[in-house]
Length: 253
Image (cartoon, rainbow, N blue to C red; front, side, top):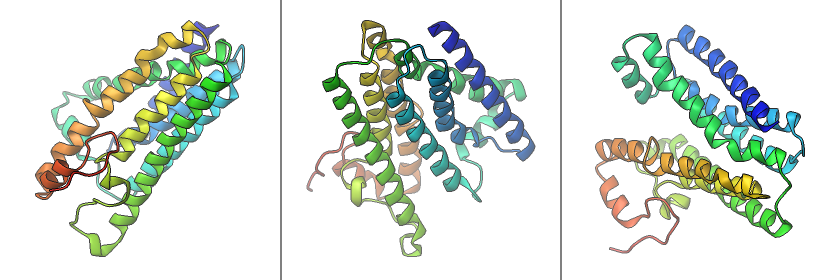
């Protein structure tokens, strides 16, 4: 039954990303897949809940709440702005449409399916002990608050004309240079704990590990900081005094 769930989830991801690809080709820009990233997890959670042998509503709902919020935020943030430079660069290096499909859509679809394994597995195993569920929800909540509040603070900062050209260094951004990435990692750590009802669920540990690695060492933090160091001269001093990932009190000069 779990393998059936995995296959149906993979099919749902293919349909979603296929639709996004068709729309992106028509619009001649491909950063819409960033919206599909969060939405894809919500789709997998919904599919898994429908097919569930032992429905785990909690993990499905938490995943859908996180995924839909992220999709809406990115959609609103990108509306009316030029295409993300990352995808412009990928398109310039791509040798035709097939290369673009492989490097962007297929890669993200496979990562999405793998990272979502705890959410899928949780529907086919008993729920973990209540104390572990409480810890899982608390970790998820910490992550969700950091990500949501961090995004909100940054949006407000950028919306103020007085801050044009300035660097965001207040609020949660005073304690970590990436409250949104830290929040993502914590969300998936919490979801993983909610899947640890048996060793089967615990065996999906590589899913949150991959998500955290992507945020810290992959396409998240390194690319963001590379861009910020080039475009904001004051970023180096900010980075020296502010934690790179885990929230910590800022260092004093």
